[in-house]
Length: 471
Image 1 (cartoon, rainbow, N blue to C red):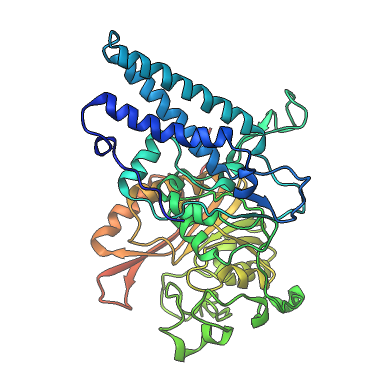
Image 2: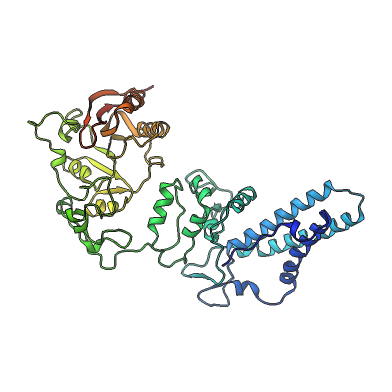
């Protein structure tokens, strides 16, 4: 659907304020007159239910409600401006009366249609014969939408975010509230066009294959994303998972992963040396190779920036039971910890490859989470947080502070923060170490060593830190 042109009033008629108002009056009154007097079932023409049952109520798209509300707002502004004009002018007084009459008609129209904005009956699939305006807005249009308080065109998004009262009016539920207000991330307002696209789909049908767009929204701060009323796609030939004693270290079957959004179209591509620079991911080149070697450093080797799992667990024998691995990972750390009776959730996005799918297929818990999200755990509940190949010199100090304090929030007293191979430029290391020191944790293990795989101008920092008791 093409974007509606928004001609400025000064181009409609020359001659000052009154001609401008008359031009707008004609523009507003004509469609209202047609809608109010026509016997044509225009609402059904605009929006039908797929079932075709004439006994069903017509469900209107929410963008029509937006348009009417927008006109009401504009008319209110015009009426206010008229009060500032010369009240002795007969022409202005007459026009003001006419405009007030149009505003009242528009209010009646809005009231008469208010009952039509509702959820469709269960089992019905809605289809729209009029596409919503999803053309990317220009800068001035975005500013206008922001000032008017109407940022989104998607009717389904407004359906989702609208207040959901309980069936028993006036009574609080077990959460202690009288209604639920579903939320979306504040940054979604800066990505209105993208979120409108995300929320354009057929209700009760299969969802669009757009998880990659959803991940871009998450990574950009549009988090949480709105829920959708459609069915997630699944691999067409999905096979049952392996038992846990086999799945931890067995390469998953290709048929259990949807590959169409990845550069690799099979698991062998993820681990082959021939595809090293063609896999679509780079943060951890050996992530999809299931190996314990990384965590079992021979004791006869010189000091490295890595600690073994046994070294860390020996610091708190029997105390480490549950925790979080915040890393680009396929779950190898969690698999090693599981064999030592420690339950670890692995938090990562799908950074160009099926990280979350592989974690789940190994029988481990994936946590699909962006760096900008508050951890979904209550205060003082985790025994350990581990992070590797995630925190490094790209992160700004203020973001690092918010991140570390959120981790501190969920780690229990005397719990452990395991920082694994944080790296940055030599001249920046002091600044970052000061941020970690501000937490006031006790240093159980602490190493700063040269990072030798590049130009020699970077350092590794690894540490195991104990959270103090706080009153």
